[in-house]
Length: 209
Image (cartoon, rainbow, N blue to C red; front, side, top):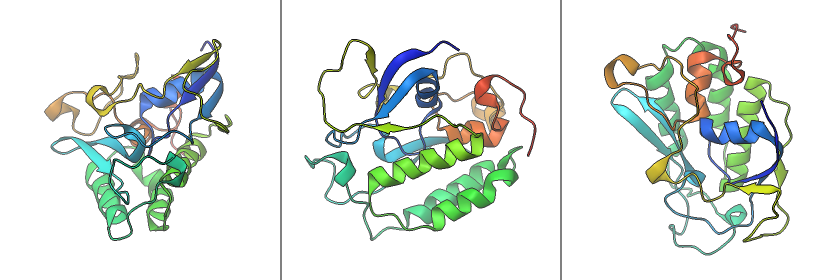
């Protein structure tokens, strides 16, 4: 796997497989924490494979989508049972997947916690995935906002729009409802983890824990 110098990534909730490919291929990876929240992106949602097709898991935020404040100040709406809904969706989608039982308790604990800040939630979701996949790569956070980045840095902050979720490149595995709806691309790393295990991202045959 070739390494680029530096990449700048947006903050995502349980990031997509394509996001993880960029993260792992980078020499250094920074996550933007000072940009304004941008609608129609994966900053407060992810996609999984549901019984009826691609399913969005969205985190509700306070104040609507038009707020012009840094993403690290965005608050999660309190009057919502989104955590319970997300967990139920994961159970319905992946409870029969090959590796679900090995990671079930970690995800159950994740959705039992209370979160108030969107950016902190996103980081926690990444740290959980990194732990389960045994990824040791560090995550760096931006300290200032830069509209333009240096030449040795690849800017992916505007890449992952909902209307064109980037496909993962040359990464295929068996999804839970593939026989019914075909292979779905642009999904969260959750899908790959439950279906193929922690080593699938690196091109190996994963052994169950």
